[in-house]
Length: 278
Image (cartoon, rainbow, N blue to C red; front, side):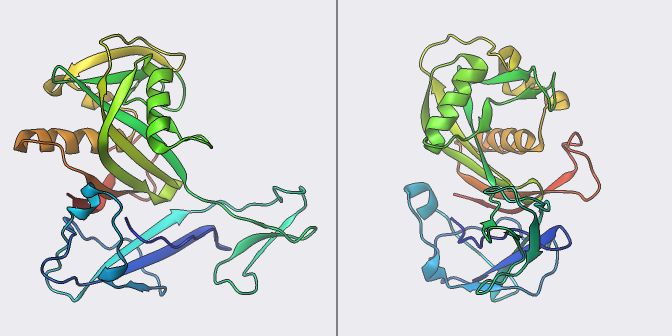
């Protein structure tokens, strides 16, 4: 949905990037619900509205608005770890800008190859059954003993939807049918993107998998918000409940920015920036 710049590292261990979208025409297809600055950077990419390509119906339903400016600025900052050794030959890396590039990279001093780091994809399902939501209590760290939607890292060789179905089976022994994409939530600080799908149970059978100690269907009013595992789950469930109150689930995009100096266990220490919905 957003045209991305691949950013790998900097000598300080932190990296910034910024997007700027030109103000679209009145009938264009995006709706920007929040616009908050994060960090400043001198690097800017100008993307005309004509370059914002949509690949399915949920993206085509977006509308973007801008109030006092002719452009909308989107900025983000990620915490990039320094890569000391080459992933190809094990040799020591140096960190500098390669010829023809603009960013500091980890370059092997032995074989000369560059090690690139990219965000991890986390995929999962928000499963509604009889107006209840299926959740799992984690049996493993991080956040053991806390509640989450079934979700995990996408594997090589599978689609995002296939990964979400697999994770649901592994964590809840539940067979599901994916209905639609509900949310894309980027977390730049930890280099993760969450894709959460709306899904239905194929049958009413579920039980804890190896990574779960308990699985349970919760009425919306009974969701254990005081013992959720991750900020991403808090955001997802809040967005879903808000949608149900007004009639139907929508598609949401947003950037979860954790407040500097807070720990991962402080799941409410965040802002949801650049929230867009269909």
